[in-house]
View 1 (cartoon, helix red, strand yellow):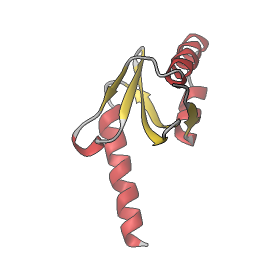
View 2 (tube, helix red, strand yellow; view 1 turned 90 degrees about the vertical axis):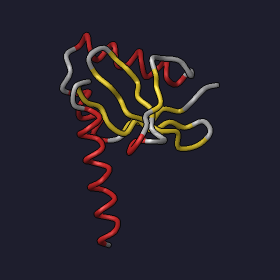
View 3 (cartoon, one colour; view 1 turned 90 degrees about the horizontal axis):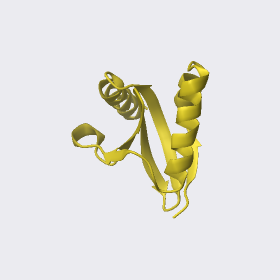
Length: 99
């Protein structure tokens, strides 16, 4: 199955900080993700419903938005990506509650 892969602003900004070899790796991994392939894994607990795409020392957190649409929501180094993104999700939820 083919997917349309969309990137959040944070992912684009992080991607632009990478060197050329890592950019190539990310680009190839996103292409494979769009083809339904890649080193992916579902996340659990507070990040239930999200998946991670492994790209060398980086992780991209994504979710299925529609049957054939994937939104890549966050990208960061492997060692800190999950706790940073969980903090970001909790911040977004608290902002929604205060509206």
